[in-house]
Length: 419
Ligand SMILES: [Zn+2]
Image (cartoon, rainbow, N blue to C red; front, side):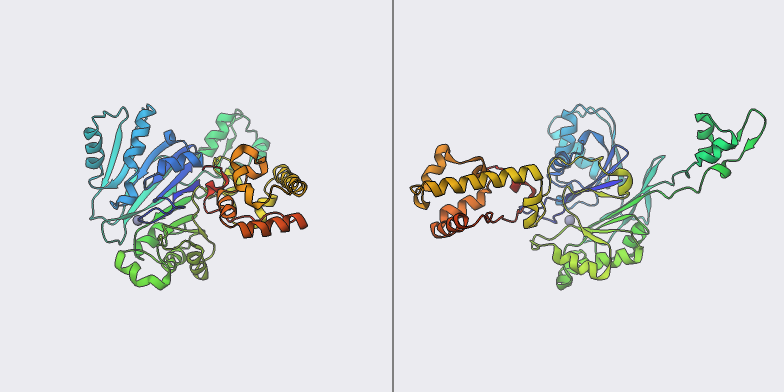
């Protein structure tokens, strides 16, 4: 399984974070947990096909958790989807979706199976597939909200092919039968026992999605022994009062659930907009539980990295927040970049008339080199705003071969020339 956070903001989106949504990729199918505004765009950017969605799970009716649902369904309609879709949500989700399409006079050409969950329940298995099931439990928020556990069923044990061959097994059908737990009779009448050849069943992978809740025992039950626990950490411990008041968790609460549930990996998300640097939250969580990670939008997390690496092809790459990274990102590209810059500097040296004062006007006339076009827009702006610094930079550049300073990208898109 691969988990791809699509939106890690809480309540309001920020310049860099989108509203709540997490995609789970498994065997070519996608299961979507919450569907905030922009979820379908983030799927596109993550390289996840919207047509592969099997189930959509809506945790509760805070608008930021389902505001992208109608848009996404409308896209599926335009893509001429025919395959049925399952939507799991609190009671009322069916009415909401149907009203919207009735209002727009759209007759959906695919069937939606609704699984509505009412408030009074302890635990419910909302999906029961041959290979996996999904369990829900109520959480503790200001309104009815539920958490999810996606559990793969146990996989059959590994077949000892060498041993099987020695015993005379040769056909695919025989292997299949042995794997399914059946004994096989050979032509000479020998019976090969399944348990002699097949190892112990392997436990399936699991994922828990717990958001918009205070600490509660049900979170621990859902997350028990999971491979990955995605838990909200809206606030830091210094705002524990606010977390309690609004029905949210702090990063310490998230770590507490992870500890009690003995999850293998804690991923925190759903950050309040006040944290421009969510590493504050990660540091707190890590003091209590390890391994803990920050959910980073579009960055996939593998339950089994050895097997599944490379399946999801990300279309938008995240630039590391690290100065040196830019220089070593790609050997050919960075070399070409620095060559360009050197050329540029040499040219300046040879033509003193192109000083800092007239560079502003020459920029618009298409005189910029490829190197210049690659610069970040922010940097360009800064230069033209402060001629003195510009002069300083110029001196440095002429005197030494020190490369220009890199800015820290704020979003994965800062690498693009989009203005
Ligand atoms: Zn929320």
